[in-house]
Amino acid sequence: MVLMSFTACKTTPKIDWASRIGVFTFDQAVTELGPPDKMTTISTGRVADWVTGRNRGPTFSLGVGSYGSGGGVGVGTGTGGNITEKVLPLTFNEEDKLVAWENPTR
Image (cartoon, one colour):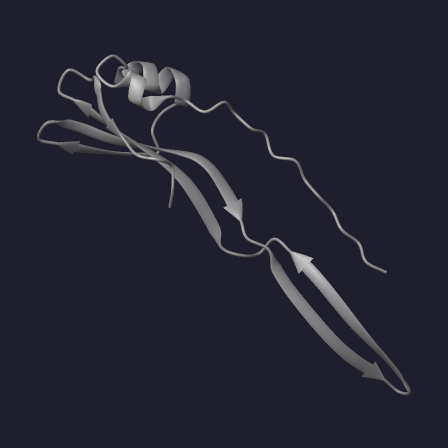
């Protein structure tokens, strides 16, 4: 017998960050994305990172056992694998306007 489960992921519309360069402010980012998960001050402004998604990789296991004259084989899956994050770094100038962004990865 094989059991499988599928889960659906919520998809959000992609944002055209390039069109926001020079007009999108840090306050607008906080309103839209919430407080940043990490922020660094630089000489020309600040870089703020938002975690936009997390995925936990699957784990697989296989077991074989016996007891007396009987035996068995088992296969299992779980969600104990590595966690990967999608991080959106946004760079703002001294006037708090967006000057750069990177695709969410990590």
